[in-house]
Every structure is written in structure tokens, then in C-alpha cells.
Length: 501
Image (tube, rainbow, N blue to C red):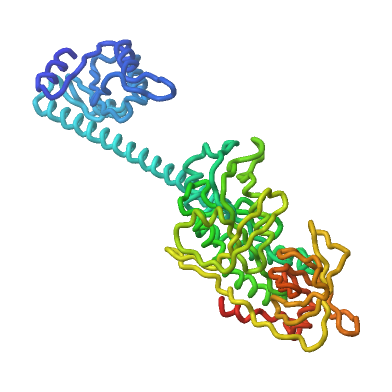
């Protein structure tokens, strides 16, 4: 064995260790691999070849072969047997015991070369196996990465489907990139607040089935959200048929008020699509008023750890609600505080000053119908519809509304001219108290005192002495028949709206 070791090592290309007992082999194998944390880690190099001396091995010591074959670290290592005298019977016995090659000792030059080639082939195979294992591991890792990416894409898609209806794409990306923003709390920030509300929807909804009301609202909200998201706004919530949105949060924007005005004009123009939906379903046309205000507010997450929402709170929000309440269908009313922050041209149709409940001083407003600069938008139906004079005597009994309560005192007036949107009346009592921007309910009667139509609501938009201009906020079926809007059971949509669409 010592001589065989010397012969092998003399070539300089291999290094052989001679082990003369089962215990020596067992100890060496323990050093080859140690089991730690269920992973086999190599401590010394695994042999490339194992040579056994058949002549020195007793029958009991052949158990060494079984021991070596059961070692995971030695799997695939080739076995050579050497003996002094070979015979066909001995060779067959060696092969049965697991030998790959049987050699005669002492070794010849050819035998040494054969060992070198066999050990080299084993090392190449072992390295190739390691390479395949690495490739398999890399493939498995790649598959795991693909699976995780698919889960992430599905998660993000779900988040975009849910939150994308409330935030623009840029806002949503910022929220996902900054998960710490989900904590309760917020900050004071100067924002532009927008509120919109449908006119007469409450009365309309009372005559519709819940499914129809839901379908109409969903269609309306979808169009409004489309315009708000287009200009970087954030929808805070839907309040019945109203929308509360902010511009400048959560992403700060220098042109926040310009974006709010552009969104409001787009919303008014999209009401044409809403009315086409109403026409297809036999509903009367709808109108919407919009109010815009700007100032310092609190914006952030409000609630508890289990349930919270992104909300805006402050005086500006309350004042914006009052401003929106003074608007009529098709209007965008913008406060002076907001207009002072606009740097691009805006087209203003009218100026007004209101005294809102809960507001200490009068609020200056402007009716904005267009915005220039990069937006180049204009409300498509700003021109008033053509009114026609009344042929017969029609008396309007006007009942003022305060705090959503209809007063019992009536203000009688004579109808002069009207359209489906407006009416001009002449008050019988010049001194009758009827303020501009106040809301009224109308009960119309003919010369014989019989009702012509009921269930009509309007807002006083102008008053010159005893001549008052009313803008209808809700009209009934009886008014539609009176004005000729209703034809064969369907509601005729304003031609201006059709042209706008």
C-alpha cells in the first residue's frame, strides 16, 4: 500500500493517502463531511478515486465497501481494486464487490495514467454535476422570483383597481412607495378644495327604484372621478350625490387651483354624457353646481388603527360647501382667495358677493367659464337657452326655502317668459322679500286658479326691482309637459347639451 502510494504521488499530478485500517478510513470519512443544520458542508477535499488492496482485505474487512457506498459525500467516487495475481475468477469477484477497474501491483505507467484519466473524468463529472445543481438552483430561484413578481403584480393590480378609483396614478404610486403614509395623522397644508352637487337629484331619486338610482349615481361618479383624476385631484368622499375632492394633496402641486378649475370645467362638460344616459333611460336631464375654495386645511388619515380614512378638515371645507350651495346648474363658482393664486388666464362670466351662514364676512365669488394656458378649456354650454314668452296668464307662487325647510309664506309673481332652464317673473309685491341666491319651491296656477305644474325648485339668480330671474334646480313631469320638454313619454334633452357631446 505504501509502495502504491509512492507510485501514484511520483507523477506529481495526484496526491494519494494510504490508510491501513477500517478505523482510519472511517475517521477520514467523518472529516470529509460533517452534518450541520441539515446541510452537508465539505471540510476536506472529497477523493477522486479510491483504491483497495484485495490481498490485504479479509472477508470481515470487505464491510468497508458497504460503509463507503453508504456515504453520501462519496457518492459516485470510482473504486479500483489491486492484487498481485489476477485471474478471471478473482476479477469477477472484485467486480461483484463494486470495483470499476482491477489492476495488478505494482502499478505500471499505463496503470497510473489510467488512474489519472479516471480521476480527471470524475472531477469533470462532479464539477458538471455541481454546475447543473447550481443551474437548477438558479432556475428554481428564477421561478420563485417570477412567482413572487406575479403575486406582486396581482397585488399591485388589486391596489390600483381599488385605490385608482380615488387617486390619480401619480398619487397612487407615491402612496405605494411610502407605506409609512398609512399611519394615523396628517398635517396642515394650503389646499384647493372642490365640492360638486347635482341639482334636483333628491326629488328625482324618490321616483326611481333603488337599482336605477345606484346605476345613475355610479355612471355619474365614474365621469366625475375621471375628470378629477385627470388633473391630479384626490377624491375624499362621495356624499350622497355630491363629490368632495382636494388638489395639492397628498402630492403638493404649485398649479393646484388651476388644476381644480380645469377639472371642474371638464366635469361640467361631461354632464352631457350623464344626460345622454338619463335620456336613454327616460329620466329628466340633470345639472350640477361646483364650488372651489382655497386655504389652509388639515389633511391626513383620521380614525382608529382598525378603521380610518383620508380626510380633509377645516374652515375652508365648510366655506367651500357654502359656495357650492350658491351655484346653479352648469356653474363653477370660485372664491377670490383661490383666483388670486391662478397664474394663467381665466374667463369670468359674472362676479358676486355672498353672505354664507357661519362665515363672518362676505365671500367674493366669480363664475368661471374658461381657463387658458396649457389647459384651454371652456364650459361648452355657458350660453343661456332661448326663453319664450308665455301666452296665457300663469301665476308663480314662490315659497322661499331656508335651511332646507319650505316656508309657509308665499311670494306671488306673474310668469313673463321661460325655458326648460330658467324663468323670468314679475313680482306682484315690489317690496316682497326675495333675496338673490335664495332657493324657492314653485307652485304654478292658471287664470282659473287650477294647478299648471308643481314640484319645481329654483334658485333666484337675478333681481331688478320687481323682475326676478329664476334658475330651475329641479323640474317635475308636470313642468316638462307644460314646457313641451316631454314628448311621447320621453324627456327631450337640451340641444346645446347634444351639441356639446
